[in-house]
Length: 94
Image (tube, rainbow, N blue to C red; front, side, top):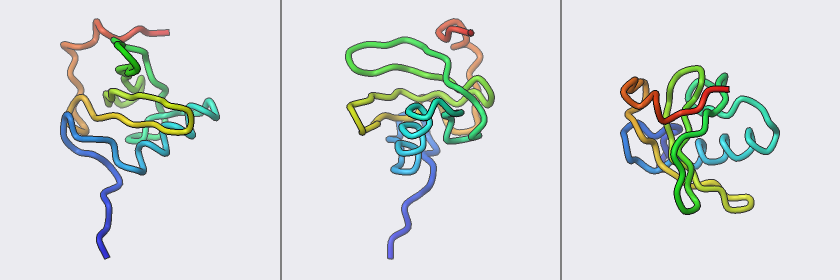
């Protein structure tokens, strides 16, 4: 049996099934939505087309997500566990 990873690890790696499901359900329930720390809410960043960049306000994880009804797809923007402070200007606080 092939085990699927719980988390994506590297920049530009597609979200895992766990991450996609966690984000979608959390946004629908208005609960903390970061699949990495499970504590933070997303700050909105640049958007284009159907996608939105988001950053966790707790651990700094960044994702590019697209929501289509009951489907969430996307990718990790930075490596897991890495906070890129040079990108702070792109995210709205509050």
